[in-house]
View 1 (cartoon, helix red, strand yellow):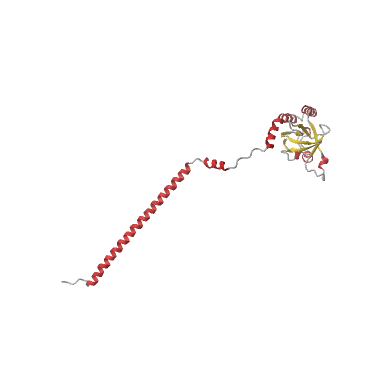
View 2 (tube, rainbow, N blue to C red):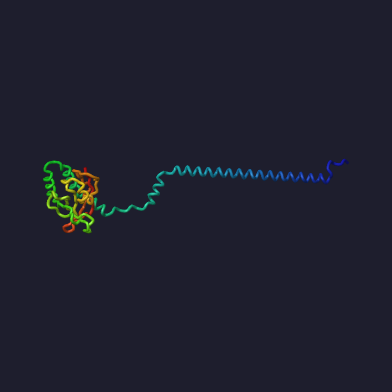
Amino acid sequence: MEQGIFPPVVADMLIILSFAVSIIALIGAALSITSQKQVRDRLHRVSELEEEVRKLQEELAAQPQGGGKAQAKRAEPPLRKAAPDAKELSAERQIWQDFIDDYNSLAASMNVPRADEACEAFISNYKLQVLRLDAAQMQPGSGQDTPVFVPADDVKSSGYWAWPLPGAQNRFVVVPNPLHGYTKTLHEKGGMKETFASNYETGNFKLISVKIPAVFRQDKKLWKIDQPGVIRVK
C-alpha cells in the first residue's frame, strides 16, 4: 500500500482544518445574509416612515386655512361692552346733530354782510348762552389748570356758545363763536386748544367747522369742560 503525500496525522489535521474553515465560511455567510436582511428591513422601515410623513403633510395641507384663525378667535377673551360714556355720547350726538348742522351752515357764511345779525338770530332761535374764558381764573398762582368760562356781556365779546343739552341737567353743548374765526391768540390764550382738538398748527383762519361739539358742565355761574370737542379750521 502506497503511503500518502502527508503523514496520517497531518492529513487528519488538514481534514479537520478544512472542515473548520468550511464551518467558519458558512457562519460568515449566514451572518452576512442576516446583516443584509437587517439592512433591508431598516431601509423598508425608513421608507414606511417617509410615506407616513408624506401622508401627514398632505392631510395638513388639505385642512381649511381658516381653522387656525377660528381657534385663535375662540382663544381670545370676550370683548368688553362699550363704556357707558360712549353710549351716552352716541345718544347725545343724535340729539345735537341738527343744532351742529345749522351751526356749520352759519359758520360757513361769516364772510357775508351782516354776519353778526345772523349770529344773534341763531343765538335767539336756539336760546344759547354766550360765554367767555375767565382769564382771571387762569392767572399763574390761581391753582386752576383747566379753563373756566363765565357769561359774556354780548355776542361780540363771547368766545363760546352754549346750547342746553335736552334731558341733561347743567350740561351744555358748546361751539366756538364763528365771528372771530380761529387765531393764534384764541388757540394759545383763549381756551381753544383745551376745549377742541383741531387741525390747527399756526396762523389765522376764518372758517370753523364743528365735527363734535364740546360738552360743558355748569357749576353755579362757572362752566367747565366735561368733554372736549373736535373742530376743523380752514
